[in-house]
Image (cartoon, rainbow, N blue to C red):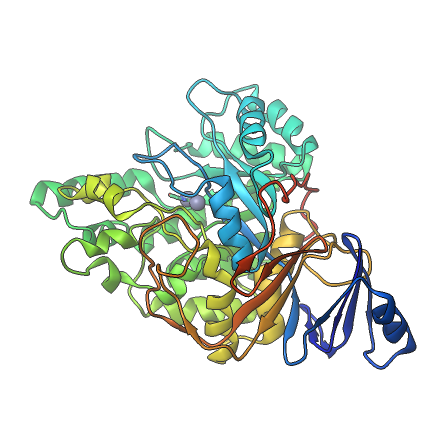
Length: 467
Ligand code: DUC
Ligand code: ZN
Ligand code: ZN
């Protein structure tokens, strides 16, 4: 099957040029001048010609932080690999990296094999896995090496959640030392969970049980402290470090300081920290429960710092931490915010939200929009140049994006398996129009043309993003 996408502006992390994209099978074979003989003859014989006049043609999005079909929390995550990845396709994200986690009995390879089996044949977009690690013993570094060979080249650890997912500094250091040897990346949930749990307990004892106290009791100072400690541990171990879901100006300052010292320290933020704030957690009638995630939404003034970080490359990646729970599931925490399941639904809207905040509202450049949503995660997580750009030889994962298609986000029209939208009514200027997954047209306007099983497991390389 050959396809020519003609007349559009091809936007990568570097360029924005009028060019035609030529596809043979699953691969881009050329990005060529629209008036060239090459383009005319290819389009003349192509099986399909897509007119992208007036559109941007961008590399498929990569969401490096999702939790699909996860059961580890108080309630099960509602999006399955099937529903979540179909929503992902609608939003122009053609690759996800999901978090594999362990049950109490499992070792790292068991947890990975279980996730591989669960996702097989279910996904509508390509997918890889990170592995969550909490228990660390003498066997863990060896198992880590095995996973790196299977394409799992990043490991999430938690400085939060004592007694559950938490690892102490010694355990973290041991994994970082191994990461320094095998080239993998430690991803850190950086919040001082020991201190936070004390403060949460005190709040509930006082009767401060509403959702807003989820935000108030998780101070950004304790996020910054954890980032600082994680940087120190990684510097001693000689390993790179990637902070997941960075939410505050305080934490960003620590990342900037580390990077200014030349360390391989990177960070991701999420749309919720750029578009939502502590006031959402304080909505009346328990509606604030819809906005519970960790780290929590912060006071609005943090947002401009995060946007600046994205503009200046102090923050490299925008991922969603997609982890949806419906309104009924949120009720578990009516009398105690600590029991509200933790996570927000955003996977489908990341590309459009970030276009809106970055490009339409003039905060960050068009190229940088592509970079933080696709190219940077591809390089960070060993997918580049197969994914994350439009170049001869790269996968034909492509989004035809209409920059002038005003619409509102709503639970009425979204495809995520959750009965509300955190972004209800928010006005978007640009819209995903068509999506190709390795050369297959899977989204055409409001129509889904793919099927579950189109997505394949991607065995990732180690990061190619180090300073
Ligand atoms: N961390 C995540 O990355 N996702 C959900 C909850 C959490 O604490
Ligand atoms: Zn986390
Ligand atoms: Zn997460």
